[in-house]
Image 1 (spheres, helix red, strand yellow):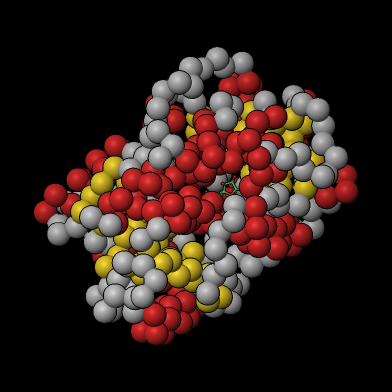
Image 2: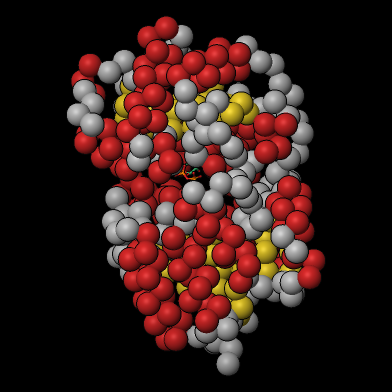
Length: 362
Ligand code: UDP
């Protein structure tokens, strides 16, 4: 049965910071199109004001109709509780379409609940692979892709990954859309806003939060030690600190007061854009921030051994430094003096959101 407001009701499941940025783009495209009633479910995975609310405010994301408040649990409990509650929302709302984003536990919980109720399921940012099954994100991506009806792929690499997994013989629609994060970067670039915290004039921007880096004390210490050396010997390091990383550093007894690293609270998207526009280099283990370094034409050193965004590495925009101090320092020194041509359209034309909505309405 169709709902009264639009031609189609779409249930959007989000819960973590990167999903707010991505969903903002598609929500705006839904509003422009006018034929879809979007009902947003926030799982509660990220709940701090500066990890959640600020994104809804800045990017005018419609207020979630449901907030499930599931957070701070181990993966199994988190995914299970989310699934149970999302299923109950689905039974009440009876949407024609369910939309999930990226690779978090909220993504997988939404996807599994939709599949079991045989609701039409679309996955934005499909087909990405790190080929590292120890990453919870990799497991979430693979499973979500396999049960989705429509797979929206940001890059040709993503399409190729799915082909290798046999998607030519699976009853699903695979489309290359471009990257919604590029849409967001273009649309909001003019809203960039200097963070309130005191900042050095010249700095490297760093983000650090992947479980594989934060949960192993030896790896975390090695990365932080490299960042300290960069800050002392090369250039200032500004690091908006993710709550997970803060918790791990606190547990190790890290002395923030004597650190040469300029730690600041997590910032909103507009402040993040300002930091990207004004830094000299990006160091990160984030998926999204690797691409944003490219969007804002800054060289990137990735604090991981592999990446889903291989085209950035192949093009020389991104260097995979791993987590050893020596390799991080060498990569920073080399990338600091790189001169790169950023005019290559790796992530589409900035209209991925509209394209996704038109595909959903077909
Ligand atoms: N981001 C932000 N403030 C911060 C750190 C990140 O707005 O303090 C944004 C970042 O610009 C990107 C998104 O959050 O748009 C990426 O999220 P995250 O790094 O948490 O996740 P990942 O991309 O690794 O899944």
